[in-house]
Image (cartoon, rainbow, N blue to C red; front, top):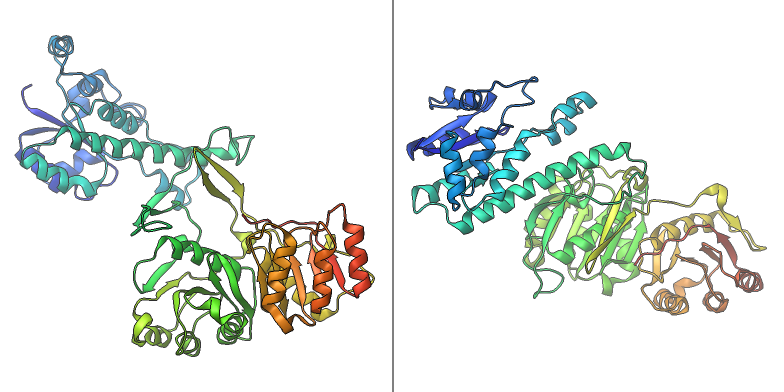
Length: 519
């Protein structure tokens, strides 16, 4: 057959008829299967069923359709080799120039809650085989998997044709399409893997949702990629209601801020700079929580990221946009209409501030899963740190027991310190963060910074440490600053000396038995 041949078999019919019509106008002979062939016929296009082309019927309820030498010889023949051309001619076979395929809707079935058997039937076999064969032979075959590429391919075919570079690009997209598809299937089958969530090889898939202007610094390229099944109530699924495009650093800080306020049931506000909290507070509503959080460190808060765990209303928006303030991003489960109007009408930075609506925030425990950390040539894969303290494991190790008020503040400080870079120290009182020591090379350095930050407000406050105190020097500093209760994991060889120092100072100390390093 002298005609150019295109094979079309798609689950997503978007734009198919128009693209196929262009192919027919260009003289392509259209081969197709099942529902795709029916769609083309209904659009008035001439199409030949693959079963007629191969002389072999579809069998096993359609499980076997395109897995045939008449198809794959046409896809895999290297037309630069005379023996390949001669073999095709001798066997009455023809090369296939174009493959238009996307795969069974495995992901859509998952989202729809398909039964196991229904899900298995959405595992495509013939489609990936067609794509791999055509993409391997990209020197002679063009493979199109995304409907969004139809117009691009059509323009080139109507012009000078697809170049080698064009076909190579389409091959890359095809292999990525198949890899993503197989990764989702592998993740679904992981339920049967005795190694559970940490198998011997890791197959992950993320989709680019945004090309960023630049990365952590202007000379770095970056993109924002999300999991196909990212949970509701996180930055990956948040809706941007207002403001300019989010940057790499905005996204990192926004995630840190949201994960912190997720810890609390009461109205909470967190203000983040460089992924560390500079202000955190609980209040009777979002407005009070914000004002208390801002008061903790108004200098550092300038230019920060603000997150809430409850609605931002007009009163709260007015507080956020008051003269002298400046924030890059505001995140909340929702914003009232009059609150949105406040931001939109504020001159200056109000026109650019990014407003992110997350919807209802699930608790930390409700969002299971793993986090990925990149390294040169490797990555680290670890469970999310969603553990709170266990009441049954708490140990009051000092002579003095915390008062009820101190217990509340210890719980607050312990939840905050989990979100501070190690070595992490937090000073708090009355549900307000007063001082933070973050990322220091030694723990006593973090203690000094947190206490200096808190100043006189440290009198009667509590202190939380993400890991144990290796020496009693930090306790001595806390005592001189007026700290009345401390929460820490415990577990140091020097615990007896640390406890003795607390007893001498009249400080109540609680061991949680849980460490919260954050690197």
